[in-house]
Amino acid sequence: MILKGFNELKQFLERPKNIVIVGHRNPDGDAMGSTLALKFYLEKKGHKAQVVVPNQYPEFLHWLPGSETTYRFDWQNTQVQKAIKKSDIIFLLDFNALHRVGQDMQNTLEDYKNDFAMIDHHQEPDEVTYMYSDTSISSTCQMVYHFIEMNNDLDLIDKNIATCLYTGIMTDTGSFRFRSTTSTTHRIIADLIDKGAENDRIHGNVYDSNSYNRLLLLGQALSNLHMLPQFKTAYITLTNEEMKKFDFQKGDTEGVVNYALSLKGIIFAAIFIEDAEQDIIKISFRSKGTFSVNTFARNYFDGGGHTNAAGGKSLLTMQETINKFTSLLPEHQQELIKSYEE
Image (cartoon, rainbow, N blue to C red):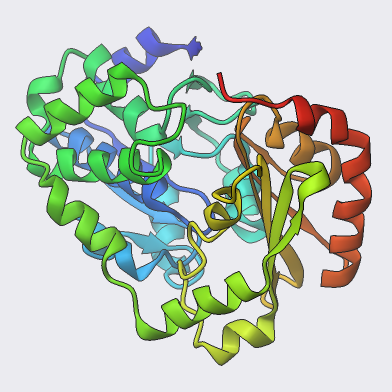
């Protein structure tokens, strides 16, 4: 764990401040849950807080308390620039480096004259003035809970904060099934339920709101599933044309890579998705056991993340990207064969 400048940050926040809270590009449940929960908490402490995300987030997260107040950099640029200009500090949540917000917003943040405070659980974070980093923790939402706890303010957690935190912990732990889900995580979840989080409603809002086209897209993805048993690997592809056919919406491919990982005997899974907007192939990696997809993504696909969950990108065509991926597997065959779940 890295805890840098916590006492100084605590002193800095003793008087009301204007604060901007930033989540990463293509925000997921943990990004939205942590930023909104921190917003509600800081407002209870007398601060003015504004959540900013680089672009659209999935429709199945639009119900989150406070989401309607969120600014999008790509859509409300004027409002974002004003908020940043008058802010006393910017909190960076659920990402470890400024490039994770996209080039345009990165340029804006790099011109910022005041300090950053980072709360994040990804490996190899950038240096900022104030930092709370812990790669062993399941989610940034759990870290926000601990941040509130370190300030002796758990009594300030109300239904809205509890709902946001529960959502991020639930989504980033795969509904509490990943290895990063500890007994501490479960104790926190119990406390959030006691403080008003409605677990059945939250789960239903996130996972039981599939559109017809989203299920058809899932069917297409599964039909594109390839298995390489000699490397204990499976991968899925989705082209831009296929996504257009099924009216792709932000968040429709969330969790699809886990279907490849669920195959018996598979410990390494990937999904390759054409992104016409950025002109790249977006990649999500998942693994079981000791095989580090964080290292794999960093070494070969300009990415990173966690040991068992990471992302990357490719500037090659889809076929060239698949060829590169499969050509790398023989180099890691022994690691893949020996990987196991403790």
